[in-house]
Length: 284
Image (cartoon, rainbow, N blue to C red; front, top):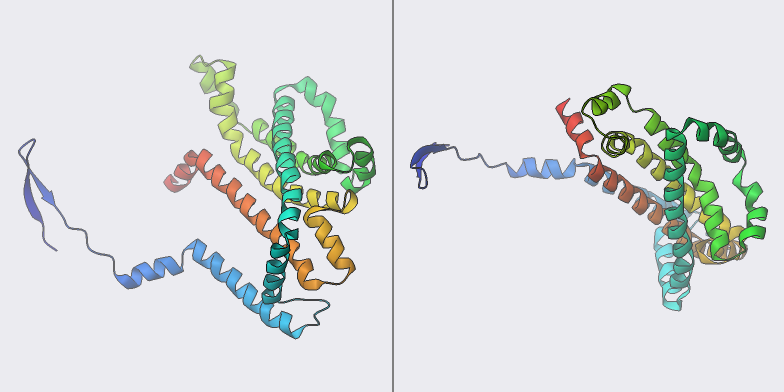
């Protein structure tokens, strides 16, 4: 590797260029194979291979291999049943998740910013959080009905509390010294909230949102079990009653993939909104 001299035309300055040593091919391959995404994909691939071998040797009444589940999903797709079920579940799921995040963050911020409101709402939040949601399903059905809004209400009542608690904890966890620095620079209360308090509480809030994604999926399935038998939850009930194991695993697998996709999306959003935390961790 040699050092090359050249003249920079605009300034006429002499600069030295050191050629970068090429990375060996074996090093590149090792980096790709040992990357986090490669390890994740490999673990999933091994899981499906083990499942395939175990499913072929098990009683088809109790277990189906991924190959038969794939064939069953294609059959359901061609008949149009799978698309209709996904649409019936996805619309209330998205609405419920949206309301969960908005209501949860709103209430969490309100009780964290106001001591009086915290004292008023704290007993009710603790009581509702402790009550099993299944016990409230009959009442929710009476109030909101069996269709779209009944599902949304069951989902929201199931998943909103982690967002409330995490938002409250994140705002209360902000160090007083950071707030004092903001006031020392004559920042208004609104500026302190949006530029200091909210960014510092963001990891807590996103952790609550991640938890709520899983609870929303649980809520939509429970809602479809107890309300109108429709959507992916309705498919689970229908095929479990007739012991169609391969078809039963189709909605279960779709629900699992939806949960992974939304959780990864929330984590990506958190990384985008909290780049300063990543830089601090790398600096440390």
